[in-house]
Length: 198
Image (cartoon, rainbow, N blue to C red; front, side):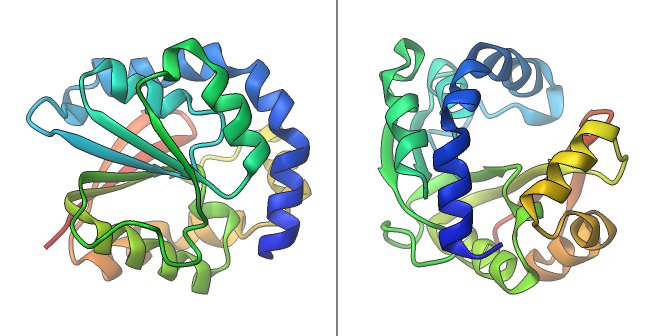
């Protein structure tokens, strides 16, 4: 999806994402606080790329990580910063399709949740490049796994991203870029594509 169209869309839907903050926090808590394969206790810092309402970053902050979060949508960030659970998170406006405003090797973990599927392959390559550049240990793409749900399919058609291609090539594409991959199922329609940064 083109950057301007994407920014406009996410500015427009920001109030709806904000309304889902508590539900998103519960989901991310289940995934990242209760899933054995997502134990980040020995890490110190994390960057959430494409943070939307900030729910995931707030869970990492609660877990004791120094959490940073970026999003291209200023409206999303305005809502995210107002959440009491997000008070320890550092929010910045940035777009992963461009250079992220951090030096190399800034974070132990870099994660992006439900962002990659909305990008064309060239944009995804830039996302992966930036995640690898600013990360030290792990790059995690939390996204769809190919099991299509009716409502998610409709939403992705409306978004106009690269959803159908992404779910078809995600494992090979991510493994090909990072040189390694561990797939951790998180629910029926999503998983974490976990890569060590080498």
